Image 1 (cartoon, helix red, strand yellow):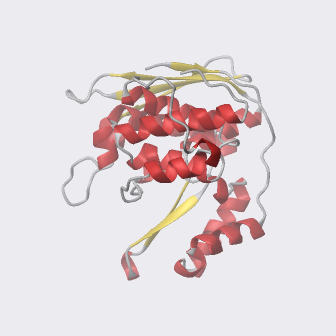
Image 2 (cartoon, one colour):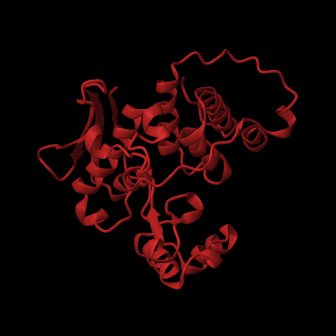
Image 3 (cartoon, helix red, strand yellow):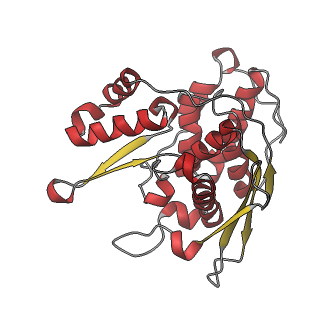
Length: 274
């Protein structure tokens, strides 16, 4: 699947103060669960790169105990896209999937055009080199089994933008897809999503819209693009639920979430074509 996206810069990078970061750590309970050095690392990383944890631009996960304890600080690949746009040097980009999983040739190639470069930058990520596997079985993780093309594409985008904008993104956290951070445990989020991004006065209104018959794999891409393009309008719980649906939801839940996000944006005066 190909897509070419061109945008003009919208705003400069906004600094994040320590108070906001500490409020996030307190709200999520991480203040008590993180060691002093882990908390300091998280705070410094967020402040240095202006990453707002409340917008899911940075978060951390802790594994293990004692000498096996590991704290992973990660970001989402959409952060790279937004930052590249705000810098003002991005002149478009394209992501292309090639090969197939069966013969081990599945790969994603990202081409980025910069306004200050005469030639495009191209980067390819291969599924065999970036797939995240279970330490116990050696098999691909659930999300990689379910959507291999989608996942290798996400990794390729993050790597490409980090390399193409090395001066701006050098030292920023890697994405969860690259770090192999486990997704949250699966649960049914359909009703929770309805209560969150559907207004009370619409709760009893029958759904008269046509059923979304778009293949689930395409809806995944479309929903990801909505989160990337309208992240500010969807910040908070709607964004988190949509992101969780992408990571852990069934095909039906992803499609339902896409429809809800489209309806949510429509109520905000933003028309999204299906």
